[in-house]
Picture 1 (cartoon, rainbow, N blue to C red):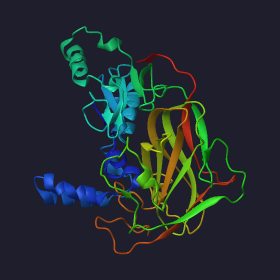
Picture 2 (cartoon, helix red, strand yellow; picture 1 turned 90 degrees about the horizontal axis):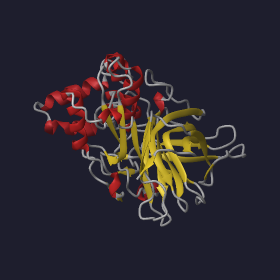
Picture 3 (cartoon, rainbow, N blue to C red; picture 1 turned 90 degrees about the vertical axis):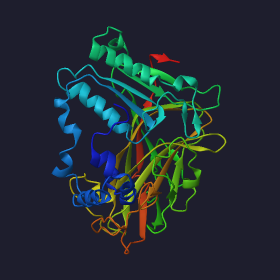
Picture 4 (cartoon, rainbow, N blue to C red; picture 1 turned 30 degrees about the vertical axis):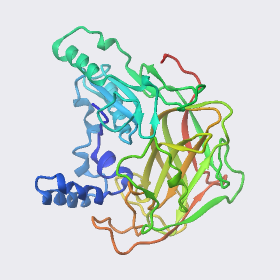
Length: 399
């Protein structure tokens, strides 16, 4: 399984609770009967929450029925990496008797798609070792399990993952394959706090009232001019938008490795009933490039779960916590780590705008929208932060 999803709600049509009607309208041109595509789109909008309609196709509910060995492949520069990881974990630990203990997982520095015999991802060119001979390995896997060929494929590591590092720096750690007996590997959950001076630090602010406020206009969203995740690219154009905020560490004196899941905990308020929150992680090079590694979004009405909609009350502080995703990145000395926050409908067309009204979401963008005044809190009582997996010791490193 390559770059796989488990839930159409979470990893396809309603990522983070948002809707993307313009993207799926474009599927008319590849549908044999275009009207059927519009009928399906209308059906989705009748189910705004993660109800029984979506549960019927949610594979996470059926791991016990998955009863075969599986070689699962994920890509760091792909938001569906979460599906690949969850598929491996579910099959390996909760699958049928022929599934438990027979899974293998591979994650590399690639974009979404089946072609992994490459070391290039958008603007990043990794060492040659980033290439993986996918077709050759698939033949070995199928030869063993379908033809009973004893070729040693079951003796290979359960987990192989590529630790990304800086490109073009001879002293850079990372850019190596590691192996593990399971996933996730051991890491220390470490908080990084957002500060009003745009810094990112290991300790929260001592101020009782630090906060950052700005306007969010769904009619004028910050542009992410793509329909595919724009990872492995310089993100400074997006970061320079007036309605986007960045929080950056000091220059690192020593390398720092993050391998595992990144989580966001934001304390926010708004004068609108609904809005979106985008969190991004970038590696900032000494020359200023801010290379995007990962991002994710959460619609505020789903901050208490996707089974119901809970709208914001004017200027009431609420917590919005969500997983940003998986990564393995070694930030080199001389670099900085950046967290980018975009509040409200900012990130189109990749993330289509939220009208901010709290009204039922519609296929066609409504004429009525709200310019929201949003605040993210950065004080000692409401300390917005990201929780990251810092790795201090590693084993089984291979070039």
